[in-house]
Amino acid sequence: MPLVNAKKMVNNAYQNKYAIAHINTNTFEWTKVILETAQKLNAPIIIGTSYGVVKYFGGFNIIYALVSSLIKDLNITIDVALHMDHGNFSQCVEALKAGYTSVMYDGSHDGFKENLENTKNLVEIAKEYNASVEAEVGSIGGEEDGVIAMGEIANPIEAKKLAQLGIDFLAAGIGNIHGQYPQNWKGLDFKSLEILNKEVKIPFVLHGGSGIPKDQIQKAISNGVAKINVNTEVKLANAKALIDYVESGEIKKGKNWEPRKLYKPCYDAMAKVIEEKIKEFHSENKN
Image (cartoon, rainbow, N blue to C red):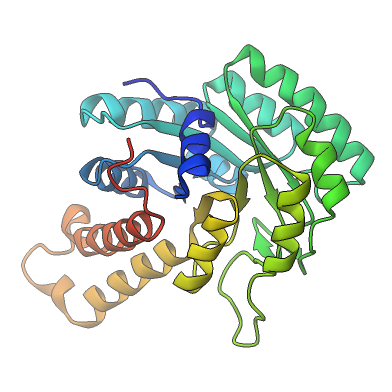
């Protein structure tokens, strides 16, 4: 099954009050476990790549070829979108040319005028590739590929102007951050989300979906969030499984140092987190 534009799956989620899991990939194993877990749960899925990961893999074309080949060889029948996460304008265009079916232009670090102009141009370019477009208003807190932001509450007027350009979904800062949440985190700002909803009638994207309490996730979904990005929790599960495997001495038994054996507990740990997230977002059996 070919990769799909993410618009339809996210709109369905928006209309029916659930959310699509956007899971960032980091290696081949990550890509495989995302696809197989989503297929097991019959859940549409978005595979995201940061530009740092694109460079790590060797380029957009390699990632597109890998995801497309795995879909074919693993007989994946669910809807899968390949998404450029937090790209600048040129990175988004490059991703589209390579076959990505969804892109996020992150103009939140630029002036709003530049953000608006670049988003407008990207929407037109994406139409040529039948790809969905995500924009961002109000920087998301935390660290993403070396870019550190304290986080902002999105301006509803700016959000409305971006939405009117024809984007498919909008990432808006509502107190969420990338990475691990500190103990003094105040939680999501639902009053701001309510105000945004009055101005913008398209699906919202919740970045920094790792570590947000389930009750806040559910409330966010009921208030227009239809795509939730998860990365850190999967990374932490992978790291813990690898550390436990080495420190327990399992790696020294027989040929357990073989890469496929070494990575089996990591795969299982990542699959568990991804399955939990899909079920938490209520996108199981929504394909």
